[in-house]
Length: 262
Image 1 (cartoon, rainbow, N blue to C red):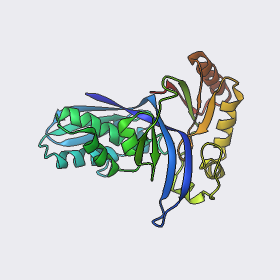
Image 2: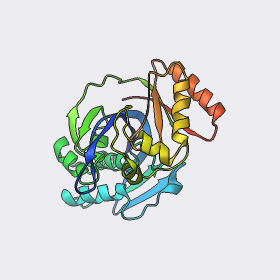
Image 3: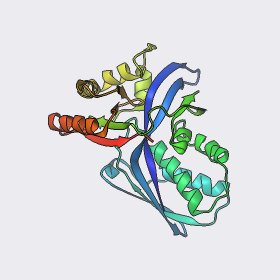
Image 4: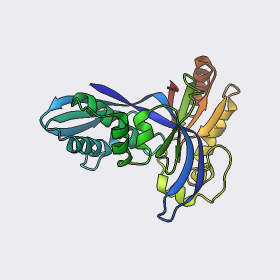
């Protein structure tokens, strides 16, 4: 069995404030690309995880890997006696503002619920997802939703951009979410309140945004999450592909993903 861990994008992200415990309250619009990491599962007596793919080197299959944590929590909650041999094909860069581990954990919940034939409703699995991280519930749904609280209180949102061609670009520099939030200066505006803090840490983000905006066909250009990945939406796949080719020529070291929004 296979699940896609869909790449998460923030079409908008407003930081409402810093809470007493150090976390931040947000108001964000989640959307998801059709592409992402791939998670495979096969029946087995024990739980195991193998990580492959172009970004496998940035991760280790240690016990606190989010995929294994999700698998153990699901198995324990529903008293499952089976195991699973899991293989994660890590195709998205790590620490990139694309959901990463949260999307992988969410895919594990969806995939193992099928493999283990668990009779659980969406609400039950969302509650379990929330225990794994603030982004995991949205990643579990993998559809356009508005997130408030820490991003884990979800509200229906119209899928205005469903099917829109999207180009995601990363300059190849990992970025700590915690450090970006620490650098947030309280200012708002610009579609993603974390952009100034992220750019201060990784100036190449500004170059990526400029490169995406340089294409006249881009309808919306933003940084996703806490960075460093940025994206642009287009009206047609040909416009997206032309922009991708132009950026590849000018910046061959940058990572790119051409997809569509779900």
